[in-house]
Length: 219
Ligand SMILES: Nc1nc2[nH]cc(C(=O)O)c2c(=O)[nH]1
Ligand code: SF4
Ligand SMILES: [Mg+2]
Image (cartoon, rainbow, N blue to C red; front, side, top):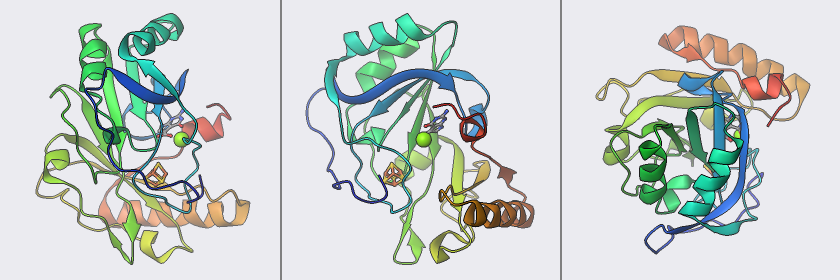
């Protein structure tokens, strides 16, 4: 959280067990599935350490895919969307987990920063949020772009790297673009970010995404 996490390399193994920070039922608050009831699986660790990161993902339990799916089934309460997020979920071998969830007819959405790849089923919906350092966005891998259903750019007025969006492959791959004000845990900064996000959305004809779960004060 807030850039204090270690930058971790991809995990080895066959994905039979995964490092899981939490599993919870909520409403998808961001991007193309906003408003959908969803079970979130938060996987531990990230290969980046963004100083604005709003998420605790250092702690984890090692759980088998069967154990994870059992928890998902027990809390789903009718939800048919599972969101796998992190940290960076593509750091772990999630194919087996995705296969299991798709077999149970869930829509499976993965949130990724687009810089690492692991094999995933074609039916998985990837939402990619590009991250920047040294003044430019990390390039998004081709194998990620090919499966990305939405690109979600964060906008921050006081952060040069996040004042506008740029081309990371959205035109070539015809990917819808969302812009989302960065939450900087400060009313004044957040108000500026909200205004700038509206301007950036207008300039690029992009879709404005607000963090619904923060408005609702839920997980
Ligand atoms: N409700 C809710 N929606 C989310 N969409 C993306 C999230 C994330 O942390 O990746 C998130 C989250 O943490 N909570
Ligand atoms: S890529 Fe996402 S999860 Fe990883 S440190 Fe940055 S904001 Fe946090
Ligand atoms: Mg979050």
